[in-house]
Image (cartoon, rainbow, N blue to C red; front, side, top):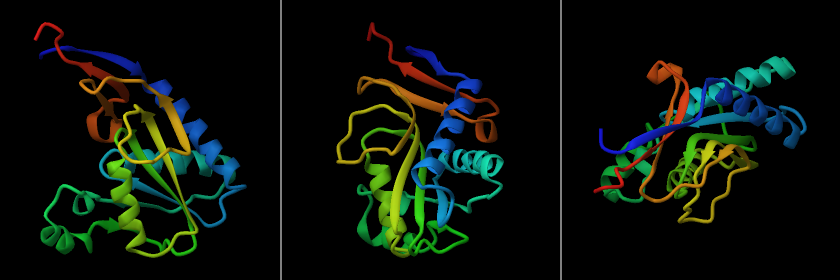
Amino acid sequence: MDGYKTQIIDADGIRRALTRIAHEIVEKNKGTADLVLVGIQRRGVPLAHRIAAVIYDMEQVLPPVGHLDITPYRDDLDVGEAHKAREQAAQLPFSVESRVVVLVDDVLFTGRSVRAAMDALIDRGRPRMIQLAVLVDRGHRELPIRPDFVGKNVPTSHVENVSVCLQEIDDRDEVVIMKPDQGK
C-alpha cells in the first residue's frame, strides 16, 4: 500500500461520539416528537440506527430510521439516467412531511452528498426541518452546508482520505486518515 494510515477514532471513540450526537439531537429538538433519522447510504445507515438506539435508551422512544441512496441525485450524472433511478432511491417507512429529519452521514467533505440527500428528501415531501449529523467533518466545503451535530472535526488536506469502518459493514469500528506516500 502506498502511503500510510493513522487511526483517529477507535471503537470507543465512535460510541462516545454517537452517544453525544444522540443527546444533542434530543436536546436541540426538545425531545423526539416528529423526529426521524435518515442515513445516507452506505455508512450513514448503520450510524443512524446506532443513534436511534441511543435515543431509545435515553427516551424510551425509537425514532423511525430510513435510508437514502443518493446516487441518482449526484450532480455528476446524466440527467436522463438519474431521473429514472430517483424513484427507488429512498427507503423511507414514513412520510417526511412536516417532520424533523436528521440526515446522518459518516464524513462531511465538499457538501455535495448532503445536497443530493436534501434533494432526495424534498422530492418526497416538505420536512419541517432538515438537520445534519456527521461522524467526521473534514472541511473543504464546496457548498454552504454546515452540520448541526459533529462527532469529530478533523482538519485534512485535499490529498488525504478519511475512511470510516463500521462493524456492520467492515467487521470493525474505527476511523482512519490515509495519507499518500510523501516521496511520490
